[in-house]
Image 1 (cartoon, rainbow, N blue to C red):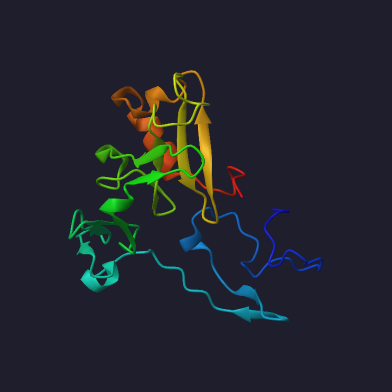
Image 2: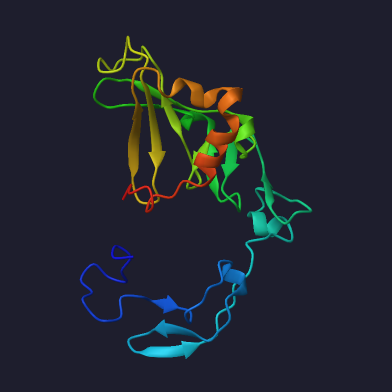
Length: 194
């Protein structure tokens, strides 16, 4: 892709860092070698691709349990903190579940929806997603059916604005499947949020 570069100033014929041979395989674990790696010059190398699975509590940063499926079940509400991320590496302190904006003193709160898969907190890129609390101070949103979410894109925070009640349904049981899919498959690059 023209926007995936190894450097913002790279104009060489080799804009990649690592690549496989040409393949028709869709599953990265089935791609055969050898691979080429850019290390100042192009060199051939072997690449090991493995699933991101845990085998014990240490793999969950001692902030959760490794379950039989090889994924971490992160601790919730431990000494005022909840742990997020595939390895329970991000801590969400209770006093950070609601944040205050600087301009209008408006507030945003973490969205707690168990069915989104994290067990408690709606998250993107292992960070909580915050929802604007209507009536908390921003004149642009108060008195409307608008929904404003604050999300992390992997490199920055941004606001996602649903107007005229368009976002209200994403929290209902009827839209559970599509909302879960959208959040679990969200990617800042492909959604052009970079």
